[in-house]
View: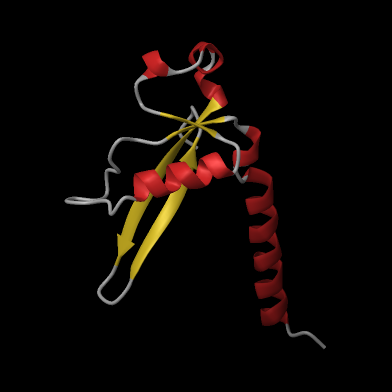
Length: 109
């Protein structure tokens, strides 16, 4: 028999998974990805992450754009909500270094 405390934990876990599934971004819905010239959270060097991310996204058939909107295709310029922005965040602590890849749409979600 499941105890009441375990039942609460299970229900919270199921609720968290369901809400994540409902509100999660789908990068596959976008054709264009903007990669900045330099990622904001890296002070000195971003270790070539821009080039690596660009190569990986091109391999997945995304069209990689720069931040300069005048070089964008007409479809992307006409509706900037067809473009998702990529950002790499340096999440380091004392003994570990983590890199988080975030994609944000035109409403910054």
